[in-house]
Amino acid sequence: MTQPPKTPARFDELIHPSTRLALVATLAAADWAEFAFLKEKLALSDSALSKQLATLEEAGYVATERRLEGSRRKVRARLTPTGRDAFHGHVAALQAIVGGP
Image 1 (tube, rainbow, N blue to C red):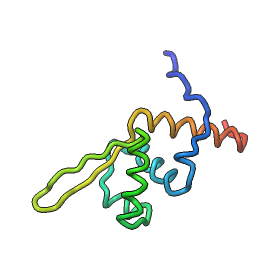
Image 2 (cartoon, helix red, strand yellow):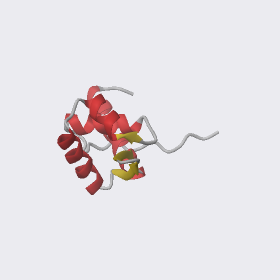
Image 3 (spheres, helix red, strand yellow):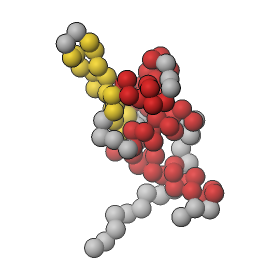
Image 4 (cartoon, helix red, strand yellow):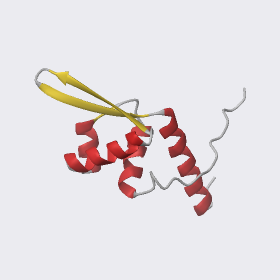
């Protein structure tokens, strides 16, 4: 059985800031993540999380879905294939810097 092609190592300035890197890493571990979960996990305010999601969504790295549940608006987010590739490439670049596998 052949292995899938390895993502090329490439440093990504957009996801490198610690808040965005933590957000992308959290999203990489899930199919979809609820806004409230991300806010709590990353200890961010509503506005800070919204800003980071908007930046990543504008770059095509994240997709968000807004829906109404009862009288409450719910937002959830996921990494797009482009975002997932960027994350894996960034992690590979960081591993190369520190001499990892």
